[in-house]
Image (cartoon, rainbow, N blue to C red; front, side, top):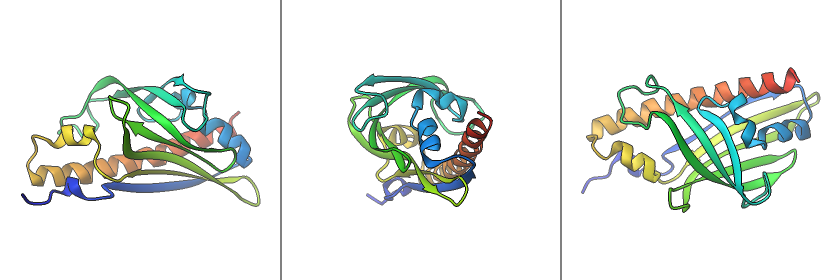
Length: 180
């Protein structure tokens, strides 16, 4: 059996950053409030904390998501509304906030989103990052019927989508914070 691009680890590893006119603690208060994610996320429409204290390490967040038909339109992706669950893995006010996507059985997956915040002379630098080590169950499902060329195309197209999402998210968070 030959190796597939889907066997690469990490499969995705991206980051973007932006300067924000607010203190690290002010930035953290917004990015750690995942129920507000509809204000800045391209796909997450918000959600709720379902287990544990809001934004604390170990707490589980259930997100409601919405994906249009245009997003990597050729690929067999979940479209419309769907739900995800994630566990907070790091929560240090003013410094970092991260969450790991869970499988439908609530098993950990190597799919971690996060924000790091660095103080600047005036304001903060907000870094948004995403890393998927091994492909998640969802990625395996998406590519299960694709040949290797289509898998490579999917990884390239999905990487481009993720890069846009990180940039768009940061711009929206900046707007939310600075217009408050």
